[in-house]
Length: 234
Length: 108
Image 1 (cartoon, rainbow over the protein chains, first blue to last red):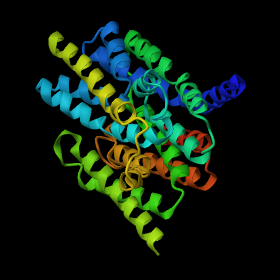
Image 2: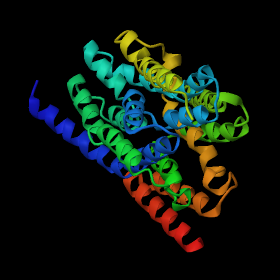
Image 3: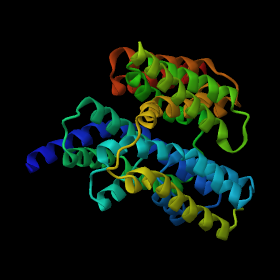
Image 4: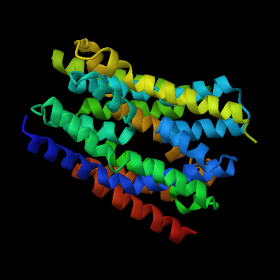
């Protein structure tokens, strides 16, 4: 294989992942700050970010531990938040399933929301990419994202000063995800899936352990799949 | 104060569990074909999970004690609209962020 193609795929991934620095750095820092105020030291906060690399699940676990929830409930809720990762894994499998096992292991460890969102859009749009190019692109996208996730967790835990939610930092993640969802609404089926999932997430928010997220996501996926099936049948 | 044993059980358990969830299909299914009906559902994973994850944060922001708040709602709508119309995530993200920060500054 031409290593120049791999290099350019890596660079493309790097370029596409770079804007997320603006989101990841403040988000990781908020986690570091909250860890510190929950009584974690720098090493513990960093271990959290290295082991899990999933902001929403880390925040959920931290919050529940502070509320003195039983350990099993903490684990189950935070893993429920991360169940979407299994869906990401399945949806990337047709594109990355041919890679050697160790590369699939690497992809799995680094499979964060932003890398998934970038990867799946790229692979769908460019079906001619080789397996090697896909892997190189993926590694490119996480290069600016994951090290910053670790680094700014440490910065937040060291600074530890109260970052006020009123500054809008709380809203960095919604803005970033909305910016990804907008371009992904390519067909009516995609739009219907997003709409059903959004409304359901609000309707089922009362469910315990973040189950509302899972119910809403499943309903959205079923809506999208059903509309796709009907439009193919006609 | 969080118990140290519990903390490390959660860190390690959540780490292993998260890796397991990320690895389950990529690692175990590998290049065996995935049934068409499953793929048809999986195509809508991103557009379902991401909105479901953020919708409660948008409508009931913790920074406003869980009450809907006009600046955040406007920033969210503008970000989604720009992303949809121009198909450019970075543009949508930057404008949405500017609307959010300037809106919060002006209304505080």
